[in-house]
Image (tube, rainbow, N blue to C red; front, side, top):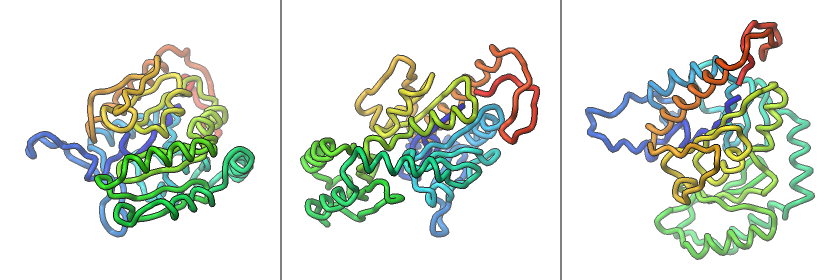
Length: 289
C-alpha cells in the first residue's frame, strides 16, 4: 500500500514548481486541479504516467490535510482510488464516501484529549493582525488554519502560538502561506493503519514533505521526502526514510519513481497466490503492497 501526501509532494501549485532550468528545458506539465475556472495544481507528464502505473500495481491512497471538498477538485491520473484519507485523518473515504464510523470515533477522541476548536479560533481572533493575515479558516470542524503573508508573519507570534497550542493538545505547522493548528490525535498515520488493515497490505510505503506528514512517514515500512518543505528545512530523518535532493515538481516525479520501484521489488519477492482484489473478485496476483 502506498499512502502519499499530495500538495508539495506529488502535486504542485505554480508557486511551488521550482522550475530552475532554462525555459526550453522545462518539463511538460499536466494540470490535475482546477479551481474557480483556473488551473491550480500540476505534475509532470512523466509523473502522471508513473502514478497511473503505481495505482494499478498497488493500493494507492491519497493522504492529505485537505478537506473532502478540496480533495475532490483533484483529478489524479489512473484509476480512481478506492481509499483516500482527508482532513489529516479525520475522514477515510471509501469509493469517495466518508466512513461515518471512523469519523465518529475521531471526533470522540478529539473531544476527550484536546482543547476545543473554539479556543484555537479565539486565540487567532485575539492575537493576529490583518497586516499579515489574509484569511481565517476552519476545516471540517476538526482543525483551523490561517492564510498569511509569509514575509510579514512574525516569527515570535508563531513560536508563542506553538507553545500555547502544545499545552492544549494541538500541534502547529507552517506550510507555504498557511499556518495550521491541528489536534495531536488527528493524524494521517492512524488513518493509514486502518486502511492498511482493511486492504490487507503486506508493505506500507509513504511520502510527504511537512511536519504534519512526519507521523505518516514514521508509521510506514519505507518512506520518502523531497528536498523542500518543513521536513527538509529541519533535516528531519528516520532510519527507513530516503531524503531526496530534488525540489519542486521534479521531486514529485522522483518520489513516484522510487515508490513504483519499491512496489515492484516487493512484488517480485512474494510468490504468486490467489488473492481477493479490491473489488472483491479473485485474482491470481502477488500480494499487493
